[in-house]
Length: 440
Image (cartoon, rainbow, N blue to C red; front, side, top):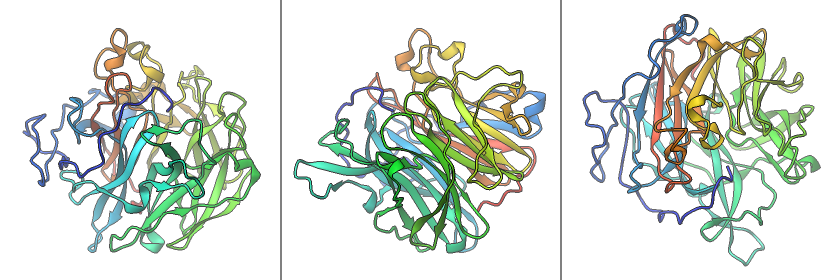
């Protein structure tokens, strides 16, 4: 993110339980009692009145507040990312990873929470022991290796969760901006009995990734044979990073690179960042963050050899103005959608235009967005023109299919110029037709 200097983070401690979900009639803003599960209030449907084209699949979107901290009296949770796992009876359980944010690129230990009733109530967040901070081997100056940008994914063939992020380095209460060592993917696994593993490294011995190689914040695809289709952003230096398709094998313990395809290049700023992959129809799709006020899309028949990237545009050819922010896929069996941020008259002074969150359907033949299908997933709250510092940013988010009838977008708000305050939000996207894609 690299947006602003940080303030001291709240001490790491077991927080008051602020579990969440939907109970109609709950008084919004009521404070929870320690040690008790609570639920959050649903808010009126966002962006009511969908267009005729989007109405074919998206029946409605509702917003819920999960953890509250706009008043600054609690923790600001960030990176809330969810995957669905089956319980002993095969019923879906939502497993979330999240961590506290206390400044630009400054995160606390990764925690986990779960919901067994499709988001109505959640367990108290608990730390994952291996995803805290550890001293850097060979250093005596206090440099610590932490973990951030973690995305969990259920691997059905091994009945295991892979929680994959990347390493980040801190010194004291600060992101060690001038002392970042080589960055690489780290992960833990969660077994069927709920046990989290030690921290592991996804290794790739290629000099092109000597400065960084990572799948941070990325969406991945578990293939029928058990391999994991994903992507790396990588480079031997900070600028002009490349992106390539990656095929990995996973045996329930080790995630190992099998193949890396030819790279896509982008000679602007840091290059191509935070790629996410999905599968729709007979092709793999990848969307990429960039630093030239654009986002990019590419397709592949095998996940390794990708066609030339194309800037995201509307179906009339007008490019979308995006300011170095990730995008993610919302995939339905009958349609492909993109969730993203962009410039709009309502947010023209908001940092990187990171509010509101939008969704639009993808024209799968032309590789563009259908303008008439665009609607807000989570609206901008406040005044993005005259009081932009009080608008909470929503640029780090996740998309999860949770049932044939519903998908979620989860995001941790934060206000980098107003006390690092913010809520954790969940948008429920209801489908008018069942989503026939498997949950796992």
